[in-house]
Length: 134
Image (cartoon, rainbow, N blue to C red; front, side, top):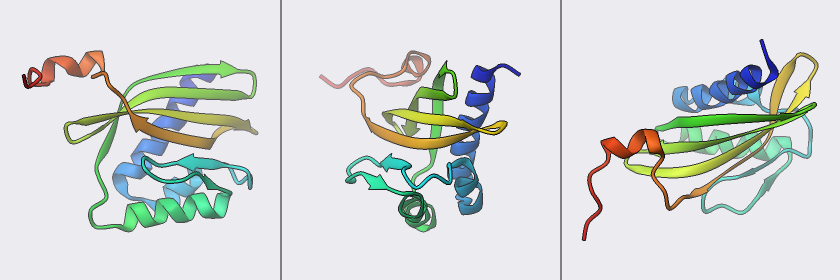
């Protein structure tokens, strides 16, 4: 398996944990390093493994937690560091996300996640969208 494929696999595990609202699986995709970070849309930065997992616990256990799907994930690998840029679909809204991974042994672990607004609809989703309101 190439590093790019392995990083995409790690990214898919992150979104699968989110979709399943599985806190143990979410914890497993994150590095144990204390300097991991996460920026949820509309939140201030969350710093440190314990704080990041606590933030995910509050999201995943909330009854109104959104369903998110990942689209057009693209990995870039630079030695033992890699990132994935992708779109996140929440209902009819899209966000753009960056997920940064580090190689830990034979695995890729998440060290940073950030998602925010995007003005563009991903190309593979454009056909499914209604035309813009005028």
